[in-house]
Amino acid sequence: MRKNIVAGNWKMNKTFQEAEELIDQIVVGMEEMSLKCEVIACPPALYLEMASDYAEESRIKIGAQNVSEHDKGAYTGEIAAPMLASVDIEYCIIGHSERRKYFHETGEQLAKKADILLDYGIKPIFCCGEVLEEREKGIHFDVVRKQLTEGIFHLNKDEFSNVVVAYEPVWAIGTGKTASPGQAQEMHAFIRNLISEKYSKEIAEETSILYGGSCNPGNAKALFSNPDVDGGLIGGASLKADDFLKIAASFE
Ligand code: PGA
Picture 1 (cartoon, helix red, strand yellow):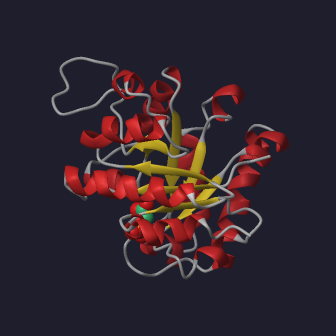
Picture 2: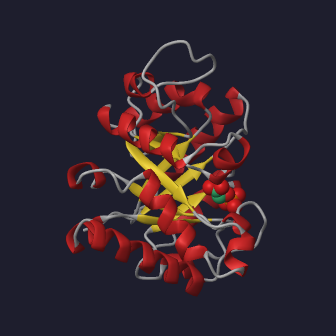
């Protein structure tokens, strides 16, 4: 059975002390809850080792927000997959729209990032999604198909079975505008169908496809109750333990 997942993308927020407080609150909160999903926190890279120590003693899983496509060398400021693996990081977000937009990440680069993560036993959380103009033009399905094709459809079946997909319509990220449950379900079903055509029905059924974009405690239940929405990648609402845990408790 495929996993329900709620992952918090903290982006570039929190000091070390605040990050430790947040992870502590999430971990303590989770102890009292019987959750029907896996919970992942993706703090800034500087705090991954601290967060990873929490993961050793609890059910929380830790993800990075980015990785270099190279495994070592003269790439000032970058963080490599073996470094993440050396502090037991289980997941890594790749292809977030902010990285595509501000850091000009290309499909080719993302394919290399997916490869290197899998080489080091780290599961990619691969983000895809259209901008508003593309939705208005009616080309959102083509855009998402292209992103998946360039970024992860070169993987073989075994590799692909370790990938989590996150559909994040860019117009919904940090804007307070959420995709309607119907819009999310429509795109998630489309993505699952593409995976089925490319790999197999079984692999498609096993793949977790998360929704991201202004997901909050008020709308999570309606989004997650769709048959093809297996959880969320949460930005703003992951920065408060209460809100994040309410979202994680939204599975029926
Ligand atoms: P948001 O961000 O929940 O703040 O819209 C989601 C994301 O960018 O992953």
